[in-house]
Length: 615
Image (tube, rainbow, N blue to C red; front, side, top):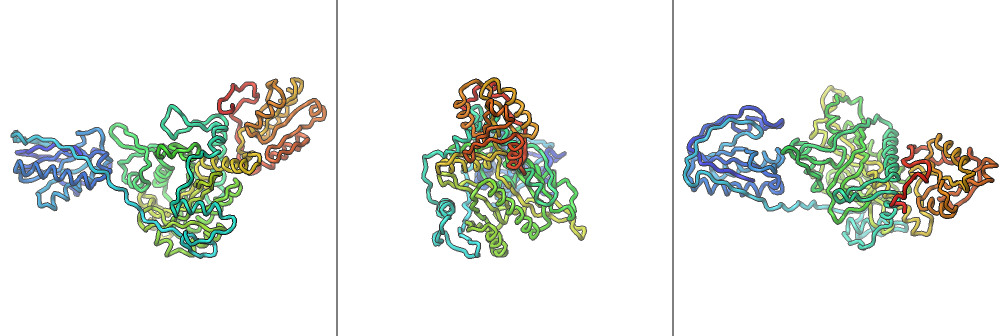
């Protein structure tokens, strides 16, 4: 805080009009006052004060009290004044600090008048003019120690048995689960130093750090771009398969900390906030799509007949991860989140809808080849009241889960389920998630009208069924790293491959036929290119292999004469001759149920410059 202290012979002020939208109601302060022989404390609350408001307020009281006694004033005026520093606290925190200063002074027996916060005020002041009549003080808080949430850990089996982690006997096939429990519950250190192979794979597909930006920010080459777009499309597709209306929206990524709901939600999220300053205001870059969707939904006149109702945005999200913990494609400061929120009428309906979400997460994890192990974060009261429901969820998992129990009332959720894979280094990586939120609808004033024509606050399910886009891709590539470790040919699903078919004509004589095939595949939405560089066949096949292209088609004189294609299949290492129609049928069957997108690369490989990440 910065404080300007004036010993005033006379001081008068009157609130005229609101300076900010969320100005303090006049009945909670003093709108007009006239005082004599008073110490006027013009106070600016700064952003650093938010780290420990209690300490800042106490130090401000000490400074005011010291000057009060020295000048022999008869009263104190606490006057909000935002002009002593450019680094302002959020309005909510500033008001909290000023009220705390007032309270502490009154508890000491001083006569205190506090002018209202967030108002334009007229004032007149007559300063005594003695040596102590004009003073300034600066107080800096000691950073508050972050409260450690007490957690209890258990292992819950599908049979409903609860074990302490150190007492559980692991079965065959639960080696990954054991590694997860040891890290999360027993806090065992993972072996360090070794870089996961998946990072090399991310670079292979054009996911790279951006050197001109902050750490933890990526750039996406043409291969990476199509992969990101496809996963975004797929997340929207599966959201629409849940059996209730889902709306897709877009919004801003910058939200004002002056809004109490934004400020409180950010406080619950924790320390990993990206903050920006604009014209003296404090804003955060969103860490998910919550703020935007909640803002939209608070303006919708909803009825119980409309629920359940979902809203999805592919939200560019920002989290200030620690510098030493960023990991390409996985732990980022900026990423894309297909964030889905589902409004339900009450907790009971939310619990039923959550079963659908759980089923979809498990189904999509299985299709992607993920061996999910779940962490169930639950509040103590929810576990006591709904243990049978939690056991039912675990039974549906078909394998044990790690349960983390936290005290009630700390978070906005009552259950928060994280789906985790383990990479080839046996390090846990969270991918998908869902949680049941009982607090934010009230905080953001989201309501619906029930059967009795009464307004109610819905219960909200937060979910990322696939996880963030980059993490989903990380999981796919982590599977490939495990294949390689097992001596198998690594591959990614054909629907996600940037180029699905590479056609290689043996000579210039087959180029026209190769292009005809390519155009036919393009008509079916298949991403294809033609390697028309007249290098050796072996070199061109090897380069296609380096790009992990699922199907390599070699066209020679025989294929042209017989109207066939000679296909090399990466996944099985098979080589087959078939008609073009048979090949298209094979591809269409493999791509069924997945989105298609036009390719992000030229049709002819000769038109591509040497792309560094492919070399």
